[in-house]
Length: 438
Image (cartoon, rainbow, N blue to C red):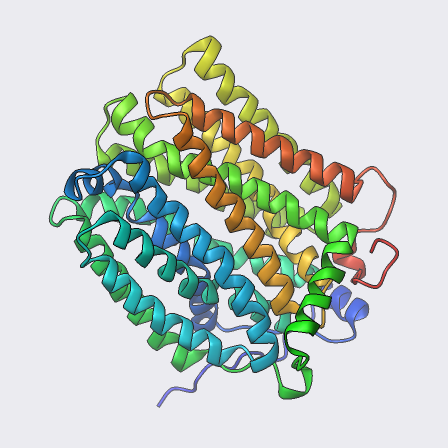
């Protein structure tokens, strides 16, 4: 019988691991490929729940005899559940350990996703999507907390970019798979496939993910302790800067996710398959730039400089998209290039910002991860509602929301993180929440 991969085995020392060891007092872990794939799949499960069914949105409108606005609320409902679920799962994982809340959340995810395939009313679908988001949130928040249990500093940022390769590849392929599934089945079949994927991930998690938070490191203070921890994290200027930069960046991404199916299929009269290809191209910008950032840029350039470049690219891409819709009246190809640039900017921001935020909460990684994910998905839940208010007759509402979110990310990062101030790279020096930046 093959040996089960362990959560961590001693790595061969490298320059990166030596720097991390010197800064933190412990060597970073080495994680085997099977566990890496499971952790990536856990963080991908919630995006899959949104992306695979996106080509089906117009068909859900027709099949349930309802309006586009109500069907778009199924996306907002899932995002809201993901946001609130992380706020519950994160502190629970700090108190009970990582494994038990994760397995319970995955089991509930499978049941709620199967229910989505069976409902006959859009309001029931919205309710099931809330539960699907609440339960799927455990995978996102706890997988990030596991990474923080195993890694510090630059090693954490680089492993986060590796996870993004896994988790980003799945949603990249999801709309293509969803579009192809519609050739053979209805939108209900898409949810059936998602439920099946949930079963596979649940079984793999039960087999491969061991407990990474020993009892001696768990927090037992209950709700008062959680509230104190949240207040302390939000009072940390740098943590809040990283948090808001990522959250508003994801708001821009989800404005694209909400508006693009209608932009392609109703404004430019493309097919579900054309939309799937556009989505895959834009997602490639996010995944590719996150890999470039994690593997080549971090460690060679200051992390704050990389993040500043990312939010600037986001703002410039948003500006370009608005101009394309109002002044230049650009076609689908030009808009796709602008969306690709927007996703690339987010790929510059995310690896360093997420790792730095968690680095500032070494004793409450689950709660910090929950805050990071909650605000991301609350902002992402707001974006589809804002796009829907502008109607589906043009790409302009989507472009305006992308620009607004990008400018908010830029403003938050510049004001709170102050990237012009001379300082060492906190990813290399192991800066914690106790330093002068708090």
